[in-house]
Length: 219
Length: 322
Image (cartoon, rainbow over all chains, first blue to last red; front, side, top):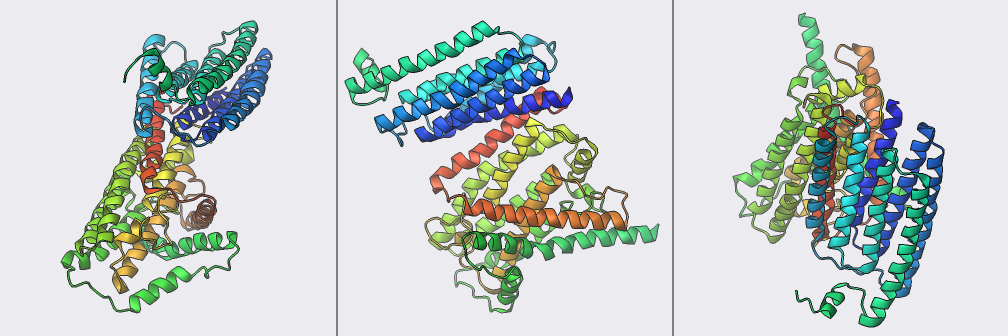
């Protein structure tokens, strides 16, 4: 029991570190790699939960996480990046240091929230819930601090990784919901991809600040 | 009773000279591994000893503008680093002065040595010395808070900041995977790389003036002063390897009550782990490129982030590190 919990906790911790890697990395390729690593870790975490808690349906979740988010989506993003020719683009609203500090604050916030809400009732699952919440919040942060549309897609997907982790830990999400979420994420990817190309065609850049200008917002 | 005291005293003394003796060998192993991996023959393993012996024989040349600080700093730096290195438990945890081997004290000793080195770098008034000192301080302002957070995480886990106590705690505990300890390990490795001026932070083998940090500060030293500075930096590397071993892989270390046999086992285990660590450092250094100076705050900042997450997780689990 103890060792099962420790391994799942370790995997969740690795996912959290991968979230920080997303914030830390400068290049688009490295961001996609970090995202793939996070998704594969998610697949491992879910598979471990399935094996140690004898819930075979979770193996499907793990397979979806591995196949779609660990392999297909990173490859698709990579191709998009290649076709757009934006390997080295670094466009951020704030610097790496500020983003990391805000990320730390978010972890603190999620810990405090989970402790407050659960009032020490959930036992071992609590830590994992806090970690999952932190991953979701870091995905949000990623979408806020990056101006490149491709990295925003990655932020969105990473947020979804956090959701799946929370669902696994909390013994909640039924398989139907699971599958439909996975496919809606895939569809979201296509929509994003189409949008990214359209944005570039129209504005010659995928820096989303161009959209603000078009709306008439002034910075 | 008296005889017991003498044995304890001798063991502590043996540890002091052990770190001093093995430090150049550890550096030699790192250099040798690096050389072999880049298909060079490499210097003999004992090159570190030969270098120091040569420097000790050479005349020491002082700049005209050098003050007393410049002349006394090497001795103080060497003494402070040696004391710090000798305090880290190596082959046994319950040596005579183990009560003094507190991590906070260790950080303070190293901090004092660093302050002296930075002052000495600026003393002569060359521009390189100043650059080196300012960069060293920039790295230190990021590495030291991370180090203190790591200390606090371990203190939550083991209930003490005494190194011997932490080592005893982890030897007694069953082997387990713990997120906050893994994160502390990552943070401590980054801090160790930064503090020892190893590759992603600083390149220890070049004198390429625009990128050097540590070498820029000691550029004006020669002869026995340089020998002491070199010996101190070797000791510092041994200290950090020893610290990593003591905190995260203390198995084999002799417990407080062990006799001669326990000490021998501990000694063999520690030496093997130390040399393995030095070899791993060599592999790491050939597989990564040095970073730009202005990327360094981000890199060392990662250590701070890791340490911070670790302590939050440790705090959440309330002592029972999860």
